[in-house]
Image (cartoon, rainbow, N blue to C red; front, side, top):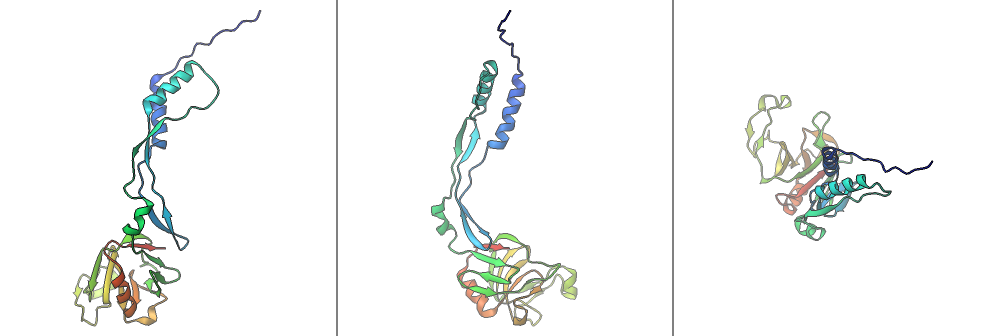
Length: 221
Protein backbone atom coordinates (compact mmCIF):
# COMPACT_ATOMS: atom_id res chain seq x y z
CA UNK A 1 0.00 0.00 0.00
CA UNK A 2 1.42 3.36 -1.05
CA UNK A 3 0.61 6.58 0.77
CA UNK A 4 1.81 10.15 0.89
CA UNK A 5 2.26 11.64 4.33
CA UNK A 6 2.79 15.38 4.70
CA UNK A 7 5.71 15.99 7.06
CA UNK A 8 5.26 18.08 10.12
CA UNK A 9 7.91 20.81 10.12
CA UNK A 10 8.90 22.60 13.30
CA UNK A 11 11.35 25.45 13.51
CA UNK A 12 12.78 27.85 16.04
CA UNK A 13 11.79 31.41 15.25
CA UNK A 14 14.65 32.66 17.45
CA UNK A 15 17.14 30.54 15.49
CA UNK A 16 15.90 31.99 12.20
CA UNK A 17 16.20 35.53 13.54
CA UNK A 18 19.73 34.79 14.72
CA UNK A 19 20.60 33.40 11.28
CA UNK A 20 19.22 36.55 9.63
CA UNK A 21 21.26 38.74 11.97
CA UNK A 22 24.39 36.85 10.88
CA UNK A 23 23.43 37.40 7.23
CA UNK A 24 23.01 41.10 7.91
CA UNK A 25 26.47 41.40 9.47
CA UNK A 26 27.92 40.10 6.20
CA UNK A 27 25.72 42.06 3.81
CA UNK A 28 25.15 45.43 5.52
CA UNK A 29 27.61 47.97 4.18
CA UNK A 30 27.88 51.74 4.78
CA UNK A 31 28.16 54.20 1.92
CA UNK A 32 31.68 54.77 0.63
CA UNK A 33 32.89 58.00 -0.94
CA UNK A 34 34.84 57.93 -4.17
CA UNK A 35 38.55 58.04 -3.43
CA UNK A 36 42.02 57.57 -4.87
CA UNK A 37 44.80 55.11 -4.20
CA UNK A 38 48.26 54.27 -5.49
CA UNK A 39 48.62 50.72 -6.77
CA UNK A 40 51.74 49.45 -8.47
CA UNK A 41 53.01 53.00 -8.70
CA UNK A 42 49.92 54.16 -10.57
CA UNK A 43 47.05 56.34 -9.40
CA UNK A 44 43.69 54.54 -9.38
CA UNK A 45 40.22 55.94 -8.83
CA UNK A 46 37.81 54.07 -6.55
CA UNK A 47 34.13 54.73 -7.38
CA UNK A 48 31.57 55.68 -4.76
CA UNK A 49 29.21 53.06 -3.37
CA UNK A 50 25.74 53.30 -1.88
CA UNK A 51 25.16 51.98 1.62
CA UNK A 52 22.81 49.00 1.90
CA UNK A 53 21.15 47.13 4.74
CA UNK A 54 19.25 43.85 4.92
CA UNK A 55 15.54 44.15 5.56
CA UNK A 56 15.61 41.61 8.32
CA UNK A 57 11.86 41.20 9.01
CA UNK A 58 11.22 40.46 5.32
CA UNK A 59 14.01 37.89 5.22
CA UNK A 60 12.71 36.21 8.38
CA UNK A 61 9.24 36.03 6.84
CA UNK A 62 10.60 34.55 3.60
CA UNK A 63 12.55 31.88 5.48
CA UNK A 64 9.58 30.93 7.65
CA UNK A 65 7.39 30.61 4.56
CA UNK A 66 9.96 28.43 2.83
CA UNK A 67 10.28 26.13 5.83
CA UNK A 68 6.52 25.67 5.97
CA UNK A 69 6.33 24.96 2.25
CA UNK A 70 9.73 23.64 1.14
CA UNK A 71 10.58 24.30 -2.48
CA UNK A 72 13.66 24.35 -4.66
CA UNK A 73 15.46 27.55 -5.44
CA UNK A 74 17.31 30.33 -3.66
CA UNK A 75 15.82 33.05 -1.50
CA UNK A 76 16.80 36.54 -2.55
CA UNK A 77 18.01 38.64 0.39
CA UNK A 78 15.79 41.72 0.60
CA UNK A 79 17.93 44.84 1.04
CA UNK A 80 17.55 48.57 0.56
CA UNK A 81 19.77 51.60 0.02
CA UNK A 82 20.08 53.38 3.34
CA UNK A 83 22.83 55.92 2.66
CA UNK A 84 24.34 57.63 -0.35
CA UNK A 85 27.97 58.79 -0.63
CA UNK A 86 28.91 62.44 -0.19
CA UNK A 87 31.71 62.33 -2.76
CA UNK A 88 31.47 60.83 -6.26
CA UNK A 89 34.09 60.37 -8.99
CA UNK A 90 33.06 63.75 -10.41
CA UNK A 91 34.17 65.38 -7.14
CA UNK A 92 37.66 63.87 -7.04
CA UNK A 93 39.46 66.49 -9.13
CA UNK A 94 38.15 69.24 -6.87
CA UNK A 95 38.82 67.24 -3.71
CA UNK A 96 42.37 66.26 -4.70
CA UNK A 97 43.88 68.82 -7.10
CA UNK A 98 47.36 67.49 -6.22
CA UNK A 99 48.60 64.10 -4.98
CA UNK A 100 52.12 63.24 -3.82
CA UNK A 101 53.45 59.71 -4.45
CA UNK A 102 56.64 58.42 -2.85
CA UNK A 103 58.44 55.23 -3.85
CA UNK A 104 60.77 54.43 -0.96
CA UNK A 105 62.63 51.68 -2.85
CA UNK A 106 63.38 53.88 -5.84
CA UNK A 107 63.99 56.95 -3.62
CA UNK A 108 61.66 59.03 -5.74
CA UNK A 109 58.88 61.54 -5.05
CA UNK A 110 56.39 62.36 -7.79
CA UNK A 111 53.97 65.24 -8.16
CA UNK A 112 54.17 67.05 -11.49
CA UNK A 113 57.85 66.13 -11.72
CA UNK A 114 59.87 63.24 -10.33
CA UNK A 115 62.39 64.19 -7.65
CA UNK A 116 65.30 62.28 -6.17
CA UNK A 117 64.92 62.00 -2.40
CA UNK A 118 66.42 60.37 0.68
CA UNK A 119 64.27 58.26 3.01
CA UNK A 120 64.64 56.75 6.47
CA UNK A 121 67.52 54.39 7.15
CA UNK A 122 67.10 50.83 8.47
CA UNK A 123 65.44 50.91 11.88
CA UNK A 124 64.18 54.45 11.31
CA UNK A 125 62.20 53.85 8.14
CA UNK A 126 59.89 56.44 6.64
CA UNK A 127 56.38 55.19 7.45
CA UNK A 128 54.49 53.53 4.60
CA UNK A 129 50.84 54.46 4.13
CA UNK A 130 48.64 57.35 3.24
CA UNK A 131 48.90 60.63 5.12
CA UNK A 132 47.74 64.22 4.62
CA UNK A 133 50.18 67.11 4.67
CA UNK A 134 49.46 68.52 8.14
CA UNK A 135 51.68 71.58 8.28
CA UNK A 136 53.82 73.80 6.08
CA UNK A 137 56.64 75.94 7.46
CA UNK A 138 59.13 78.23 5.74
CA UNK A 139 62.62 78.10 7.29
CA UNK A 140 61.53 75.67 10.01
CA UNK A 141 63.04 75.21 13.45
CA UNK A 142 63.98 71.63 14.34
CA UNK A 143 62.05 70.12 17.23
CA UNK A 144 64.46 67.32 18.05
CA UNK A 145 62.75 64.01 18.93
CA UNK A 146 63.39 62.52 22.35
CA UNK A 147 65.13 59.55 20.77
CA UNK A 148 68.45 57.94 21.61
CA UNK A 149 69.92 58.79 18.19
CA UNK A 150 69.50 62.53 18.95
CA UNK A 151 72.03 62.39 21.78
CA UNK A 152 72.44 65.61 23.77
CA UNK A 153 70.05 67.46 21.43
CA UNK A 154 67.08 65.22 22.30
CA UNK A 155 64.00 67.25 23.19
CA UNK A 156 65.51 70.60 22.23
CA UNK A 157 64.33 73.10 19.62
CA UNK A 158 67.06 74.19 17.22
CA UNK A 159 66.61 77.59 15.53
CA UNK A 160 66.33 77.81 11.73
CA UNK A 161 69.71 79.55 11.36
CA UNK A 162 71.56 77.18 13.69
CA UNK A 163 74.16 75.01 11.87
CA UNK A 164 72.91 72.00 13.87
CA UNK A 165 69.48 72.31 12.24
CA UNK A 166 69.29 69.82 9.30
CA UNK A 167 65.93 71.16 8.04
CA UNK A 168 66.72 73.42 5.12
CA UNK A 169 64.35 75.95 3.55
CA UNK A 170 60.96 74.20 3.87
CA UNK A 171 59.06 71.70 6.02
CA UNK A 172 55.90 69.75 5.21
CA UNK A 173 54.91 67.56 8.16
CA UNK A 174 52.76 64.50 7.56
CA UNK A 175 52.99 61.81 10.29
CA UNK A 176 54.35 61.28 13.81
CA UNK A 177 57.13 63.85 13.55
CA UNK A 178 58.05 62.85 10.00
CA UNK A 179 58.01 65.37 7.19
CA UNK A 180 59.44 66.47 3.87
CA UNK A 181 62.27 69.00 4.10
CA UNK A 182 65.19 70.41 2.21
CA UNK A 183 68.76 69.31 2.87
CA UNK A 184 72.23 70.58 2.03
CA UNK A 185 73.51 66.99 2.19
CA UNK A 186 72.80 66.39 -1.50
CA UNK A 187 75.05 63.32 -1.50
CA UNK A 188 72.45 61.55 0.65
CA UNK A 189 69.74 61.90 -2.02
CA UNK A 190 68.95 58.57 -3.63
CA UNK A 191 69.77 56.67 -0.43
CA UNK A 192 68.19 55.57 2.85
CA UNK A 193 69.95 58.05 5.11
CA UNK A 194 67.47 60.04 7.23
CA UNK A 195 65.92 59.41 10.63
CA UNK A 196 62.49 58.91 9.02
CA UNK A 197 61.94 62.15 7.13
CA UNK A 198 62.00 62.65 3.36
CA UNK A 199 64.91 64.80 2.22
CA UNK A 200 64.91 66.81 -0.99
CA UNK A 201 67.29 69.23 -2.63
CA UNK A 202 66.55 72.83 -1.63
CA UNK A 203 65.33 74.02 -5.08
CA UNK A 204 63.14 70.90 -5.33
CA UNK A 205 61.57 71.26 -1.89
CA UNK A 206 60.78 74.92 -2.57
CA UNK A 207 59.07 73.95 -5.81
CA UNK A 208 57.08 71.19 -4.11
CA UNK A 209 56.12 73.50 -1.23
CA UNK A 210 54.58 75.98 -3.67
CA UNK A 211 52.38 73.28 -5.22
CA UNK A 212 50.85 71.55 -2.21
CA UNK A 213 48.31 72.62 0.38
CA UNK A 214 47.43 71.50 3.87
CA UNK A 215 45.48 68.25 3.42
CA UNK A 216 47.22 67.20 0.18
CA UNK A 217 47.36 63.39 0.29
CA UNK A 218 50.76 61.72 0.42
CA UNK A 219 51.05 58.05 -0.60
CA UNK A 220 54.18 56.26 0.63
CA UNK A 221 54.95 52.85 -0.84
